[in-house]
Length: 231
Image (cartoon, rainbow, N blue to C red; front, side):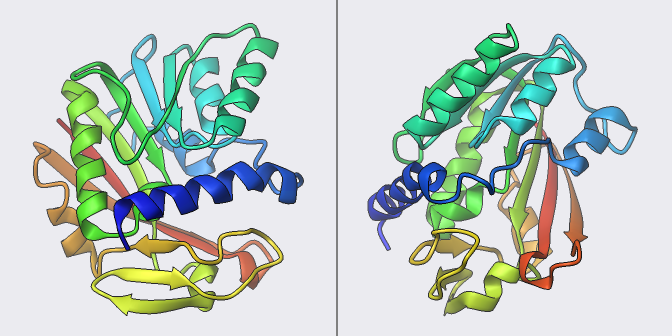
């Protein structure tokens, strides 16, 4: 699938998501990110460092970063999500530089951020080439010495129960779900953690991790590869 058609399909899904599934949005930050910010698992820049959330969704992680004192920015594919999160920040009397994504380029300048977060996002780009381009973009907008915190889904997650494996790390969602409207989207997931690590070879330091949770509903279990990178 061409990257342009992947982008347009993803944009349509997320523009419709708020209307179709208004009760499924997260109203809390990722517990794993809270742990990474608050504990000593890996060195993370401290406030008032500049942080950019790539694909910020409903803003739950970005607002958490703002509450810690970070200078916040983010980009998102959906204009509806940008509007929602802009209003959310205003309601708390906070500021964030929120910009729309067009295609697979990130709409920020080189060497701008101390910290970049990309949480459960890059796999939506569908192909190894597109995901590789996005990783290069995440690297570009980090300042030298800046940190990337990234998660990307892996095949232990329940969504893969309704996917067709196309080969070469590509998976297509072929079955409907009562929880989302993502049928027809294509994910790219490296075949192994070693293959994933190679995609971040431009970083001076890379650490890999993994998370898994199954909160009493096996149909909504989630598992992800974690990446910590230093530019």
